[in-house]
Image 1: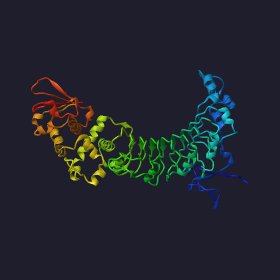
Image 2: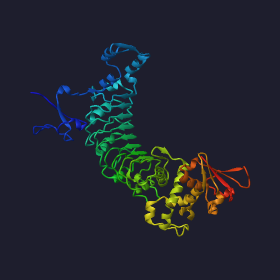
Image 3: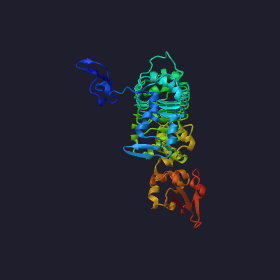
Image 4: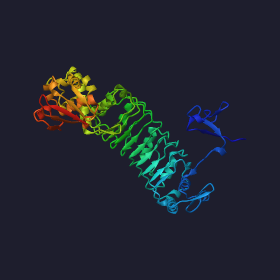
Length: 497
């Protein structure tokens, strides 16, 4: 009688069936064509942890025969001598001194003899056990329980069984701070059960698992600073409320989780939420967020400083990438880094001034007014632009002349020369010169940006007086109006970059 083994491939394209043969179901597969039958001599049942460590770090006797001895390594028929090889080999052989050990893809399947790991590798703190043959979380516990000061553990890409009840809580992870469980098929319920044994965990990586539904982490994960849920298809973005009370969570990675909206219900327009109290970095790129209202909601997070939001449908609503960036910056007041690019103070100021001006007409039409007693914008406007009142308080309400859009057209028509180094404007020909005098230097730079597509931070303005020939005065204070510098009709404003 021939003996066959049934296997399910990680890559279902390598399989042929669902575990059945001639109408008999021998084993079950998650994928209808993910299974195969193989002969036992073709299967690798793995090795124990310590054997894998010895193989990786050159402690097996066979390796001296295969690769040479001393300072000499044999490649084919040629011997090559390496300087300093003795000291490297000696260091590797002293496993008890190794702090960081990697046995990635070394076919580890079980722990080995009891207490052998603790006797041989007493000082290990960081272990990479990813992409091996570990089939049970109990095996991980058995290995970790022999390592007293384990701080970092990566067991990603091992298809494991996890406990379904909390009958036993191991102390094996009492010092563990970083844990990677990517591609292990763990569910959120199983995470919370296991988390009872992770009392000081700070970083948890759960990418590409079976996490579709979240539950509130009561009394667990309270020390967590980073949580990676990327590449899990969450059924509902509102589930984020369930993890919103993690007190120390600083970084949340939600890349490609299928969320289509973000809503923070406990805070109104222009207010801060009590949810995610410590969150500083958020990644929501590669999702299905289509409405700007979700970006408005992020301004409610009190400590958000960095955001990644590329590849979401809402970004397709604005063709100009620079304008798109300005809108996001203006909508989230405390943001310092957007899509891995630092936001400089001058860039924020320019974005907020432009935002205040662009939506000025909408503000007026919705009930906004220069008189504070008459300023009553509609709820609909505030829902679309919750930061607008704060921007008006910060910079003042937009002037009527700004809303008419006349200055950019007039400036464009009056640019007499455009050179790489300098643009000369002749204000004597401006019909609206008196209107321009009240404009701040920052506003002038904003108008020039629209014409020249050069950031205001790179522009340097000065003017030459018609009464003082050859004397040039620098316009160096962005908050001052042109009239502060006593510019008169006939003077020349110079723009350099």
